[in-house]
Amino acid sequence: MAKFEMRDLGLLSYYLGIEVEQQKGRILLKQPTYAKRILSQFEMTDCNATKYPMEPKAQFHKDMEEAPIDATEYRSIVGCLRYLLNTRPDLSYAVGMASRYMERPTAMHHKVVKQILSDLAGDLDGRKSTSGMAFYLNESLVSWNSQKKKTVALSSCDAEFMAATTAACQALWLRSLVSELTGMEPRSKGKIVIEFVNTGEQRADALTKALTEVKLAAMSQLLGVRDLESCQD
Image (cartoon, rainbow, N blue to C red; front, side, top):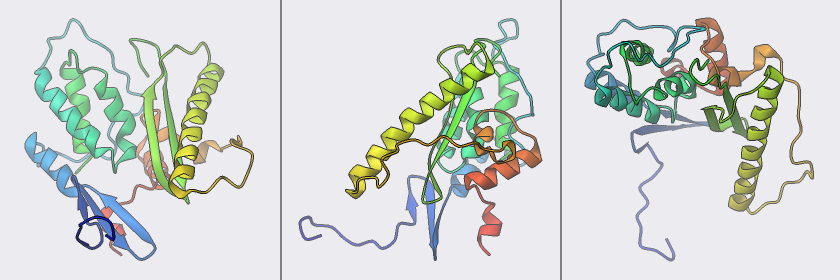
């Protein structure tokens, strides 16, 4: 304010469809109004709610025999859902899968996005696995990714090394960014330390596969996704 003409508008409460609630000791980011607008736009307001965005172990593929649906509407739904991922990392895998079939979507793929919308109230074509990663700063989730690998892994071990390499590159970039923003150099010379993570605590599972209701709820909790009503207490 000493150098530029500006006004103090107080604490941030709303930004590009993201609602910000600043409480003592924590900041909540949510998009309930945006989510309701999506449901209304695609006439899903009165749909039957589901407990998870995608059926566990569900597999989808390009169906060249089935008649295609309206690709414009399908792409619009997926586009809206992708912006919702700013506060719903638990939907990343399901939305990512739906995004793979925007060129020629069919009724099978339309059913997938409808289930993701209802949640708001493995690649058979290329044989490429999906990797997921989540990064935290002071125990707060600041970056996450769910993405199909660019190459085919020859084994599960191969897939794990590929995912670890991608995560390491992202971690180094984030580390450099934080250092630049804070002006503080990392205190430890060790850039990356690999530790064993128990399967029950592998929160990135929500970014790599469709999970059961109980498993998804547990991983969402670990990721930092909270129920809006319980957050008001």
